[in-house]
Image (cartoon, rainbow, N blue to C red; front, side, top):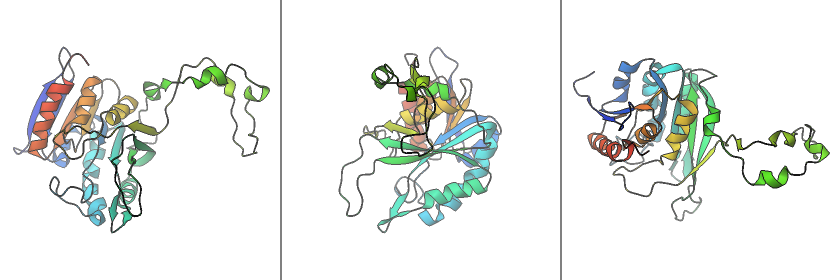
Length: 288
């Protein structure tokens, strides 16, 4: 590694789980981890969003800038590995600039497979008033991968089926016991009897989580629930997770609590210091 790269490793108490915080450019750092990473989950700096905190990238230039990370990300992942990008379009001169979609299209043109588009539903969006828009209550989470069949642990994110099942499945009609065309002849049908006895179901592709309100000394802290969900879904228990725009280290905290090793990379020295402190205080305890 370059002499300009500094790193600190935090150990989880009474465990072999570690999180290494590296100050440096992830395009350089990841050269040391070719073929070793199971999951990259990150929220990159949004275009022109916070000029005082990031090197500003104009929305028009964002796809080209982000594509400089394409090869380092792709090469670092295992064949079954995944990349999850949490990001949102920017409003420019009153309209949504589609730099996000152009970036995803550029990644797909370069060889990534767009597996699924998830939505982070913000349960507490910021209040305000805008002449042509309502409150911003969601963000994208794009799941891309090196193959069409990446590692996918759906059973790890199952959730309780809910109280509706007790009443709906108690008395099944004839049409509930076989797959049949719907009443409006749409071509969609379902055999509801298959739900009998089930305690859990797969979640939807909408993840509900509150915006982080507490100051983490970083302008764009995403909720721990986001990386936790994708770590359980896309990373094996002995896997390695990377956040190449680590910020205050939320992905590393989620990884440590779930017993996965992780590497947090950021080129900002202050953010690395914040991440180390948070990981020590919030992630390394054996009480998780």
